[in-house]
Picture 1 (tube, rainbow, N blue to C red):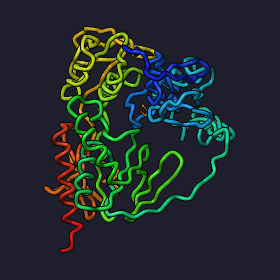
Picture 2: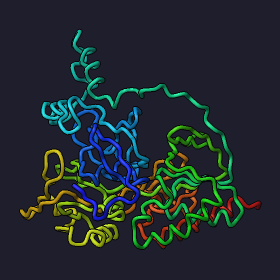
Picture 3: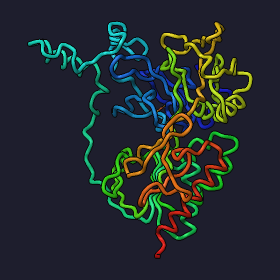
Picture 4: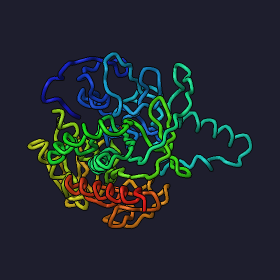
Length: 416
Ligand code: FES
């Protein structure tokens, strides 16, 4: 599906289901597997459809695997050190030939396992047991995990999201001598801007200042905001953080194509394809770009002649392939062979954390975004900035949005 245009710097190896994969030290395992030509890394839990990485930023289920005896690892967020043992989970047979795929053919309209055989004496409970086994998401870890107590902290401001809006907000708050914590799901600061020509320099400018002035938790997620406290999980620990003010800069989810075949390995967000291209990893058999806007332009520029077609979302009739993308069919009867579909359709603002903290949402271009006032304020003690507040992915606009929220926060924290 993908190939490298340059050899890995500082190569290391790991195994995927026994096959040796050569990787560049420090690159995510999922990136290395894609670069080695692997497209199917996982299976959907219930119908066992093939899954491949779609986002490369911890936002889908396409890269989940068992790594060194631990299940459900998002391999797009795990840097390769060398020597890892990666294996598929939740398959009967192999990752590429999963016999449980038969459920997809038996139940073409999906399974309502809550009601399947329910009420039939003797059969209902057996069916539930079977469904739980079939739709599991991996075996328990090889070794028991020792629980550790969550760490408690307090700060003036908790910023959720380390993209350009979050980074620029943190810098301004640090200038105002506020104590700041920053939580981000990614493996590095900068979010998608790291893979945009027009955003990379801004990340390089803001990142070091932020790391020097705030407590930064990477590969960490805010999974809830309860009574003024954020519950944050990172791979081995948990934190309970009580901020005086919460700033949400959680970005946006990639857009989705609503056509048959939209879940095949090879259908990826344009940002993910730009991420790979920035490391010299490009579609082997060409890509079709779907959608308009800045990310469509960025991915076209990054892939150059590897783009076999660029079409609008409404032109797409279906995506062809059984276990991975083989081509795209359009409504005017044309077809294009390709191994990758780069989706640059309308994104969905990630409003969930802000909404849980009390913010309201409103409809913006195609989705719900956090409603903010002119100072970025969304609710008492809650501010929002960037794409989650409906700002388009324009690096300068994102920085301005983060700075606006920071000014609002400083005013809110100042004695009256
Ligand atoms: S979560 Fe890893 S590719 Fe989407």
